[in-house]
Length: 355
Image (cartoon, rainbow, N blue to C red):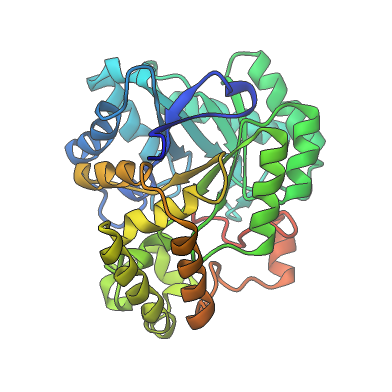
């Protein structure tokens, strides 16, 4: 049986967290935000299920709302105000460092400082910021300068640990040489496992850095609950993505159906199968599914205890190879748009606003 907990990397190597983390984005970055009490129960359920001493890794963002403001953090502030005893049972990671006017990264010192202060203001007094990560790598700012700014903020007590998001392996190595990186957040799923993703995972393992693997369920497609574009709520940000175009959803259903068959034979849900597959990609890989329901939070956590045999892993790889994956994770950005947004070259995704 797989372990239900795991140690974090970098400067948080003494912190034990759940083997499966909890993403909070879709609680608030949807046309109709989830009611507070439902969010609170979803968060509490995961924490209550952990063994003594373990923390739940919670992932939030400064801009996780339809208006790209601090709605997600404000929800968390209300949660910790109502349930202050849960503050020390969680490890909170928050992304920031964006320019809302262009919806792109800004890793300048002034912007990073303002972003962290804004996060702390929205989060309130009941929960500290454990880890801060720039949401994307800004090519206009040398990564070494960015890390020196973040290291200074750690020394000032603004937060304790540094993370990165959607960087490539070379950037991770350069950043880690300036200040230890605790975690790097990238997209990993049976739908999203390119060579550059593997390179980040391998480099992180070498450096002792955790990999926080977001969207292990392909942003919902792999659960089998999205059979057509009509299943997306009007205004859902996923409708902007290539993989959620009607023809690509339909084209990927054979993959989903085949995975459902394997999950049925295994006696698990297809969501659990995919989360277990992501966890199997490396000892420091921590799947980060989202959940706004207590039952789903517990289902996701249980996936951390599922062990897949080599035959089962090979079968999953064979399914992807047989049917292929229709569409990509992004919005089909051109090189010019990449340059305009300042996205890290060869990062694992071209979608800035989605994670």
